[in-house]
Length: 148
Image 1: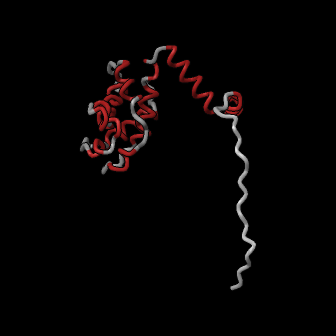
Image 2 (image 1 turned 90 degrees about the vertical axis):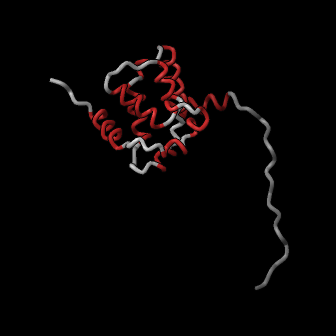
Image 3 (image 1 turned 60 degrees about the vertical axis):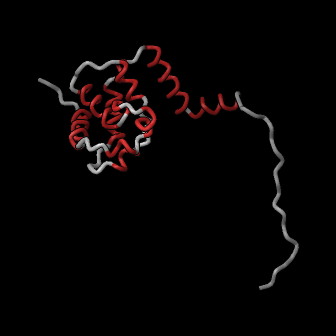
């Protein structure tokens, strides 16, 4: 019996919404900068679809997905209402196993560091970029009384 993955069903619904019109290309900063179709939301949708269909994915595919800034500006111009940010999360998780072990470990460490306040605050306190403290500037108070 085959198990049905809810995330893959959600991804399939999102992918089917995309009509590949190309409106997202005008608002995607990575596509504007690099000019590569695979570095556009439309190209990444193809890569995610291929990964979810168990086609061969490479480290190069992972690089194209990682280049996305997740600014979601493509969602604002999409006439079909594609939830690209959610699809990208599903796609990145689907091909996470392609990462080298050192990259998985470093990404885990960075994620833990940034999301653990006690660790972040302790390191921030130890490595302050500046210890200069400026005197507090008191606002000038007017001695004039105004009557209205």
